[in-house]
Image (tube, rainbow, N blue to C red; front, side, top):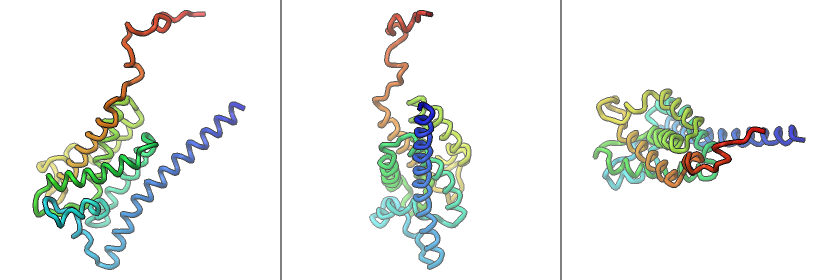
Amino acid sequence: MANISANIKNLKERQSFYFKLKLSVLIVFTWFVVELLDNMFKLGLENYGLKPKSAEGLFGILTFPFLHGDWNHLLSNASSAIILFTGLFVFHTRKSLLYLLIMYLASGILLWFIGQSGSNHIGSSGLIYAVAFFLFVGSIREGNRNSMALSFFIILMYGSMIWGLTPFTVQANVSWEGHLSGAIIGVILALYVYKGFVKPQELYTEEDRPFFERHPIDI
């Protein structure tokens, strides 16, 4: 009976994981659809990116993560996004979509304020930075080694993300402000989400632990 219950639990966990993976793929798939339509009909959608400090650029807060300069730009973001979004859905089951929506909007709003006037920002890398830093900071606060390992792996795979946060360490056409905006929002959100979190072992000090826990009786 115990084996049956364990098998059912494992099956549900696998189904839940595959659903979250499919959801991540579906989100990224919309980026491919936009890029395909843009290329097929020569729509020039990249011109509708986020333009800081301009009323015209406000609409770009909603559009810029879906727009990419070319297929290479999109492909370089897609794999990291799928892994990170899946990690977000796995480690934050109940409010993951809310957190993703907040990072999506807030990183764009911050970029609109701090970005250089006259520039046009496109690409999902800012959102990727937001999720990566959210997971990494949250995992440190929570002590979740799996989440921490995932975020650290992405930071390495994505190419030393720290170096993408300054104008001195990125190529001229790379939106370091977008990366920085995403990173800032990810950190702030993680600190807010975990502001009241206390690790189980921090509930009381060693001296405050019950006597029977400090001096277990061997039977």
